[in-house]
Length: 397
Length: 56
Image (tube, rainbow over all chains, first blue to last red; front, side, top):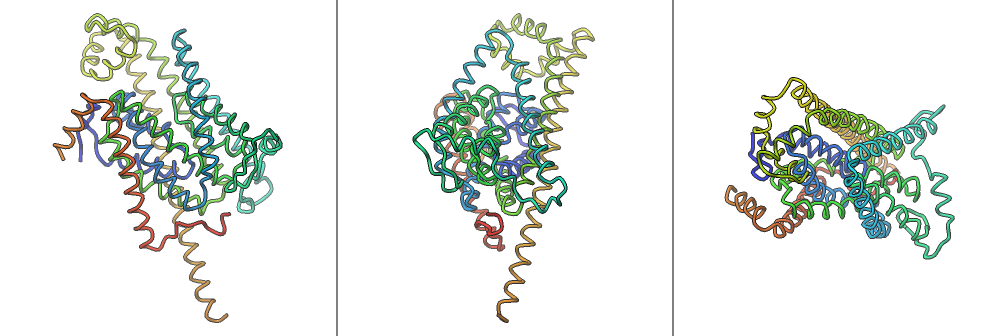
């Protein structure tokens, strides 16, 4: 069944939105991230203009993270005190990151710099976590190691006795408020700089710098994703860039997915969560490389296209021109048909690499969520078997 | 349903602040409602949502 989405001006099959919501819901609930780095390129591939893809994603992330946070709270994985302190300081970091972006925009270097920082972070975090997994399981059967334990950096951070000290009962640690503030400002800065929710950098920061257990890092990060999702949804809706019907349809899938993802953390070892997270980061890094290649082709026709838009509409602002192009695809296609082979090839290649990036993320989301669901079902089956054994053993005792 | 969607589209065009509040409210309400319903379904089919002894 196809539905027409009047705000974004897109027609799309309902099952695609539900499936996308479900798969990213599973991954978000399992890793404690919003999953914008997967949803935004996928929605873009489905035909959403980029600004609407981000705004719609933010709105659905907000609804989904409420579901995941409630579930993780019941599982005892949310450190509310840590989450609240993080939320307070993250805003400062986001503002700093956004100011650097505005400066980079003024000097015309924003696109490549952001993508390169993004790639370095994704590959850096992914490779480090993969290395840690193999180091810890080397010479052992992987089932013998449950979690990685506290990192050396986290131990050092916890020795800093700069008052006020905060007792985090859920995480089982005592740490200076200023260490948490530093981590929150830094991760907020990265989020503001890259224009993302920042869960992919905050979750590892909670693990390796603060020293939270893996499942608590997942739950507490989701608590913060809930707050940042609400802020993101509000600001994008203020700019009229939220396709609310699509966000609601995605939320139907995401709701079920988020519950399953959060429940799966009950049955999967912390170290395995870290391994899957590392794989997700590396795949995302490859997707950003595809985006970078795509933007290289865009340079081949962008100035000619912008010049034509300015000449035919009188628009001069970069963002105004970008919005006009997003909402007048057929006019752009008509103009493109009259251009030289070189410009047409650059346009086609840009679209192709953009699609590769989106399909890679979509494929990764489907594959990972399928693995997580299987793990969850096996965990439930094992739990039931154990309960039956206990019930059968009880009468004879 | 069509009337509601037309109203939302009109609100998006004419009152951005109202649309922003509506977006946050609707997503929070729908998210919480679905969370509650799924919890009930999980409880009905016997899936435990509480903390597992083996995990912590």
